[in-house]
Amino acid sequence: MLTFTVRHHEGQPLATTHAGLMAAVRKARQSRSVRAVYDAKVTMSARAVEIPHGKNGWHPHCHLLIRSLEWSETERAALLRAYLSAIKAVLGEACLPDDVHAVFWSDGFDAGDAAARGQYLTKLAFEVSGLGTKTGKLGSLSAWQVCDRAARGEQKYLRLWQEYYTATKGKRAYELDERATAAGKRQLILDADDKAQERDRVGVDTVDPEPEPVVRVPVRTRDFEELRRAEPLRPSILADVLHDIERGAGVLDAIARWLVYSRSEAAA
Image (tube, rainbow, N blue to C red; front, side):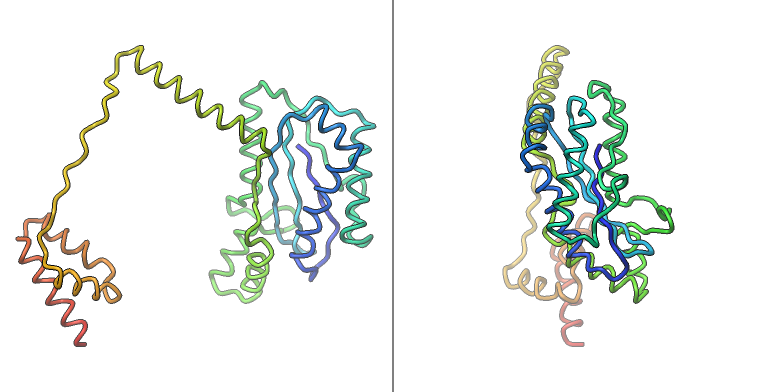
């Protein structure tokens, strides 16, 4: 898994750094030297964006999980150069990270190891979703921890959450490339075929169950419309009618009871 970062500071607009980060990652991958390695070695990828907030402001960074043959030191260096060049072009020298943190390579693992795959995908999900209540490194907060504090009415975090919402609206936090998407669809088809074969093998009855009976409640159109008009005052009023009927009240009695309620509320 690769992690791409940018240098940032308190007060720097998230919309700028987030858009610049994603543009730089794309430009680096599309550069001639890096694209050649991707075409030769990478067979699929999953991308996720994590945006915690810390003492130096918003810290957007991009995780890229790739299924790939091993990259040489020369190929990794080419990716680093392409990424730093893209950051400089998109965000300027002030946002250039150091070589150690610009592109971080996590330890690779055997793609055939299902446990390792699950561990990495779970790690990715937890990091990007911000699940849990613990703060991150140096007291940083996930976006959802910022949201939680904003929901409590803390003014600083209300402002921060509004900035986060505006900067990320319509943008994907997770994305699979087309090869990973196609592989997932193929696996769903294979899983469905396996289940069908298992049902056939054990002789399970595959006939669809009978649909549940539909109970029709006789109600006059004008009464129904009157109940619907009462929904702004009591959104559950139609469900309340059915609940009374299920508990043994007569159909007409239940309707009459809630009509009386709706009229009394309207008069009030």
